[in-house]
Image 1 (cartoon, rainbow, N blue to C red):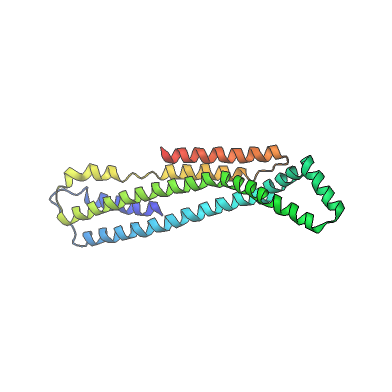
Image 2: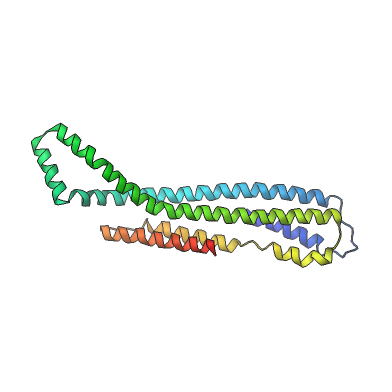
Length: 223
């Protein structure tokens, strides 16, 4: 959708900025430019909504990995600890419900803390990437609005066409390819979580590969 408003700006610039200085400006041109500015704002809102939905989906993939793969292995490893295993077996043999409840109540918060910590480790890079991308998009759309406002003023005044021509043409280069590259890097990172893994080590390697990809994406946003 971002391409559509860039195309509109390019067409307007091609139609008006390349006119000779003495050419007359159609009376409808300023109003069309105002409408284009409104359209830019609508497209900005739509793209930001898509951005948030995209990252919500990536977070869902991370949660699925944690609950379906990481938690079972973590719990298995946790309860295989000799002290915990021995204590639990003793409680089971005693068939004391109160002891079982106390055991679960004491260990539950510790288990949840570990799970929350792992989720934060994997989700935070996505949150950071989303925030940086949103800021980048807002800045670029702000620039587009500023360009359009300037263009509107130019159409109203219909003056200094030659002086402003190159400056306006150079200002419309918003980096669509950069955003696409960042999204592709994030996709490859979250896709890594879906790769088959059998051992705990392999699953930790998946998580590391995911984090590395997201960090790369964040660095690309910052550049």
